[in-house]
Picture 1 (tube, rainbow, N blue to C red):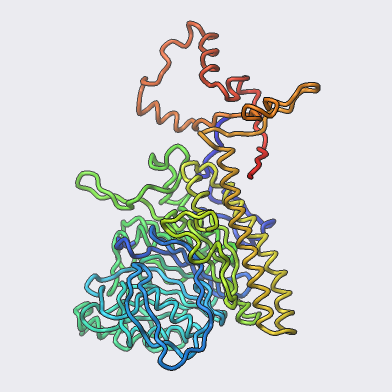
Picture 2 (cartoon, one colour):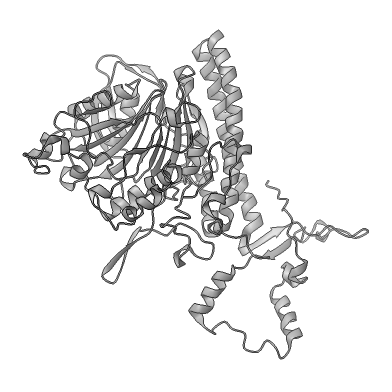
Length: 621
């Protein structure tokens, strides 16, 4: 039997089709960096405002791309802190101790990147002007996020808190784009340190208009911004004057023309092709303008890098987007676009969109790149924040958390008010150098790394993840109804304990099921075959199982083979090297010999025309 067609063979609009049975509304599936130091992350945020979402919630996604990150769900319990309490700060990327800062008198409960008040923060690193990196201080971008989540209740409070923290304690990371959202609104804040020039950072924050979608992916996105509209744009007092001081902006040029991105992070080939292209793939799939994809194609290909060629910060979508729909956009690999990586020789016989790193490589005197899609193996974890205003804040804030590659992640829901993390998602259950069969990160890595060289299995794994997420969503709705009833009768603590226990049970079940799925895949697809149940014995015959001895059951073993295109490529590359020189003199002997050499496979037992592979029945013990 030939292997199933690679997913690249399906037109994008028909790849998985519309899936109302799975609760994915208004969504037709479309599979669709700056050169940073190894320690830094290369991430993606896709943003949906309340008016653009299907349930009037603020929604945004985050993929934490890094080869060194171990995916766990962090937790900071709420606390009352005595005067004089200090907080130790560790650099998130490097693990290096930075020092201590004063702790706030009260800190809020935080689960992942979400707090008990329904505030969530994501980020992507854009790097920016190299002279502004390496500033002195005590805060990196990761600690800035979690300290802010422990101190702020709303998006506007968070922006103010972040600005004050970097001014007081300094900033040591490179340039960052932050997504800062609550149940009412969502902002993009871009911030870059002052290097060795001064302590602190300059920044600008722009509110995304309701009904619009936005995104950023390792390229600063805010260009010109309104200087006198504090309801929709706020910025550090010296965001322009500092640029003048260090020679990045001419003093005599009108301030209204100032562009944050074009000044502090000018566009480059990598900024367009390997960064903004991720946002382009999302915008192209959802844009109300049917010509959007083509209009910015030359930009993301790196052919037109002028400031005028760049994409807008936000656009109007053609339809409402759900949290589950945004999860599918996180599984995008540019299929069906000008950046489709599944069609060239690098895709291998299975048509994978992924390439072995590095993403920039040289041949002779020329440099080349591999595409950098939203769904990527080099991810520690990812999430979709769903911030709902129709529930108590500790329940209404929801983070759908997944580990490893968003392509195959099952996103498990957690509430911002939950008081503990399940063991399989918690720190201490394995680490980057310690494999653990209790760890969700290792469960999903095991399955994903089995599928990568067998990309013809990707579609079934994505469909499986979506089906589980749909079931989780249905169970969640029932649990939240019960939790609200508890909240109204017994109080918040009872409701949150109920939700915490339910989330933990779901998460542990998902992890266990993922390890079982690896077992199924290994049984069915080991050694380049497809293994399935043998034919049922004829009446009066015994099963083909050696009577329970000598290994037991003898399964059906089908040779998967390659597609015709790959066989053609082999012949093109090798000519007659593998060609049978005399298959006609003794055709019967040749056929018999071929069957002997294929011993143990279905093709050795009967002609290919008689095969019909059954769904395998696999037992995992």
